[in-house]
Amino acid sequence: MRILFDQGTSVPLRRYLTSHVVHTVFERGWSTLFNGELLDVAEQEGYQLLITTDQHLRYQQHLANRQLAIIVLLSSSWARIQLRIETIQAAVERIVAGRYQEIAL
Image (cartoon, rainbow, N blue to C red; front, top):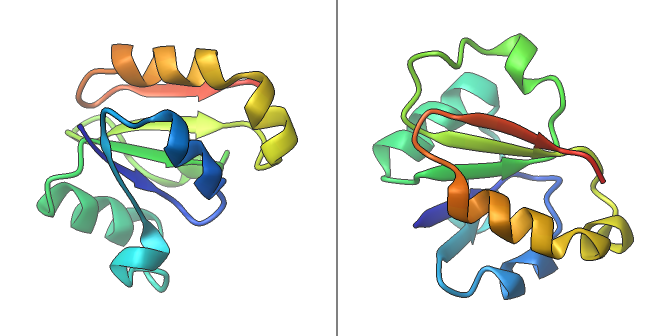
């Protein structure tokens, strides 16, 4: 699966998603894109999952017709993320196109 990490997503998480191709918004040069623009570009470029810490995304964007799945980590703290690695990995493996999921950390 092609996964895109949004700005607040801890990059070390990528080490635990080794069976997937992971890029960051920064690496792709998309740091100036926000919300709808970012979702549009990610879908056009073939990303299947966005992992973000933007808890307002679902209220700011109409997500119903998206092909891109979205996982929202409810903290950007690497210390907290590390404690839930297995939960995050399981969510990534289960997620399907167009779904939205929040993971409490």
